[in-house]
Amino acid sequence: PICPNRSGCQVSLRELFDRAIILSHYIHSLSSEIFQEFDAQYSQGPGFFTQAISMCHTASISTPAGKEQAQQIQQKDFVILVIHLLGSWTKPLSHLITEARRLPKAPDALIAKATEIQEQNQRLLEGLKKIGKLVDPEIIDNGNYAVWLGLPSLQSNDLQSLLFAYHNLFRCLRRDTHKVDNYLKFLKCQIAYDGSC
Amino acid sequence: ESPPGKPIISKCRSPEKETFTCWWKPGTNGGLPTNYTLTYYKEGENIIYECPDYNTSGPNSCYFNKKYTNLWTIYVIRVNATNNMGSNASDPRFVDVAYIVEPNPPQNISLEVKQPEDRKPYLWIKWFPPALVDITSGWLILQYEVRLKPENAAEWEVHFAGQQTHFKILSLYPGQKYFVQARCKPDHGFWSKWSPVTSIEIPSDINMSD
Image 1: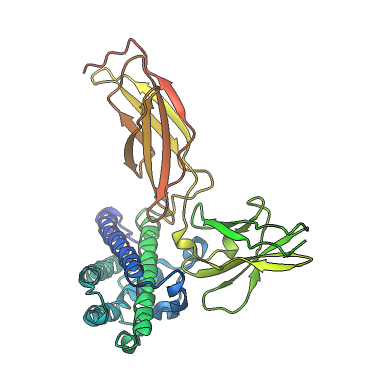
Image 2 (image 1 turned 30 degrees about the horizontal axis):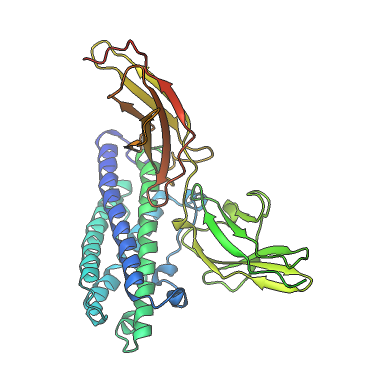
């Protein structure tokens, strides 16, 4: 079992999870805000962005879509999954921040929020690697992240294509940060509280 | 006699992030018996499914149990009305179950005036999470609010209780009757309705000093 000698290890795991969850909750709240603000600022009528829905680049990472599926996953594999999900956003966030200046209506607030998400995402990724070490020393971040090929669409000269690209990116960011937050709260109870918070 | 009016999908809601229900409002029935079917497809798929359960959640509803519920997946949902003169479909509703979580209210609120020897008396409020909700696995995390007011007061006094299922109220008026309610909310989602009112009368002879 995890933390065989129980004493310090389980306490520090709880502390690490609590800190990680404060971050993941905050990151998802920011992601929700940025998604809604983008929608409010750039939508051109009801249903405008429903045409923008396309596959997230992280769809290649198989993730549980419900509690029962989550309960089937080995804890070690689940931690690795969350690390991959998070790590898959390092590159898109970086390019998003750089390219967002192209957007009309001077999106400074939006860029500032995206920058904050990027920074907190990195902190959370580091924290998860520490958690990984305690859960299972074999857990390493092999950088096996989902491939993101969206840079050309963030550089499009066609305004509608540009807006659709950003909308889908923010929608996927909101979705994945919600997943990470949800999974960490679940894993904390499974790992650090023996399955029952 | 005419084709049916356009139905409207009025609400979709998940009470515990494991199942969900959508409700619709029928349009006009064109003076003829009209049949309603709910169809949907999921993001990234082309298969059109029909509602798995029209009964569990009552009339004009479709219930998706755990087997049919995937979070973080967009369901594109439509309701179709059909009678002998023709049919009419609702606008599509885009639903991701992760963002429609609205729990049922907390249950079994109990109230007790506690009078410890060495400290001020207080009102001890206790409740239980809504029925049929698993809050021990960490999949769903609920936060609570309680509110109370003296019997004839207009304004409620609201307190945030975090994830606790109890709360202590210190400032009480002897002889006063109080109404109390509680509600809950997931970490990311919507507040439940308030629970039914529970009331208690503070004894007149209670000594409020330390």
